[in-house]
Image (cartoon, rainbow, N blue to C red; front, side):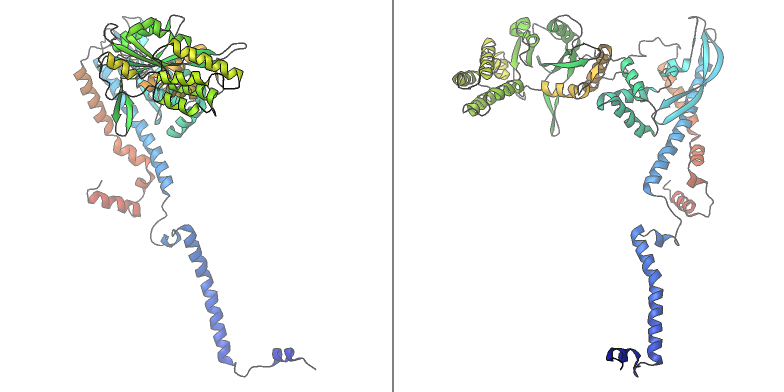
Length: 506
């Protein structure tokens, strides 16, 4: 016998005839037709709608690609226009030169690296009969050295990045991301820092009072060479007070003094103050903040009553924490230090002597007490001393800028690095000039005598004339370097740009 389940398989349902078959075929055809549509919709969803726009307009590049193309195009345009401008200026110099003195020998090509890439141009080569030497008038007139093949802006940017970044290699990578290719190696940047003509002599234009604030500290830096020990670099930061710039505070007329040589620090520093701040020992007062190093505390003996010395609260608090952390008197000691109550602080420290249960801490505490007692007023608020001298102290703030200054220098020159003395000196000068806002390239070409007797007004007129002549190349250069401007008139990009031109937008 056939089982009931089998009967159901072979028995035909009379209710299902040809109409049911036609319905099933129609349903299957709908499913087949909807499958590609679903795939297309899924693809459009994944591509962000770009597939649905293909039948409406042409394929556009991404914004990142457009930006990269335009940056490279602008670099090419800059190179062509700058080369044309330099050649035009060189031609005008050739026409206005003293032909009895300067004999034209040749026209030589040169290539310089700039922030916008390579620029190749030709310049005139002269023989100076008076000096008996060969020269390029264009180099002397525009203040650059064509033999180095580096533009002044690129050189200055490389030195600034070397000071600002954590290493020379990072500075080279940052410069590569700006220009678009590896324009300078890390060793080339190091040589630029070493040869940079940095001068820290930059006198302040206007004094804002008779008080100068000095933050003194030392920085031990490792030296290269077998058996060479680390040396201390003595750095002093000077300013005239504080001013508010929006929500931040800035130091007024900030300068940094880097002590070099074996002479007395404070004697050399006083000479530097006279040159930079027009310091008058009979009129001006000094507020000196620093740790208890012997060369720093020697300022009390050198300046006498003309200066007020303060122990840096950061170093005092750190030493007190090492001795009294977890002690019952630690909270009261912190309060006295925060109030700059010197007498109350000594009372608390003397009461804690003999209760530390550690011989090393007892010796450290006793040495600190002797140090504070040997320098009366070193914990006291300097504003009280200035008030006794008849100085208005409104707007003056607590001292303690030295540690932040040292942290900026230490972040760059320490971190398991070792230096040669010559390289370290050059780097510290460049870093101090950057912090103080001193243009390090000033003066390289200002001391040279002008080789042409052309007035300033005539020079400016000739430069403007050369700019206008080079500017005529703008349209052709842009058209040749932008692919979208070279397409036929039937393309959408041509129609869009034409519409912008007709409406006066371009």
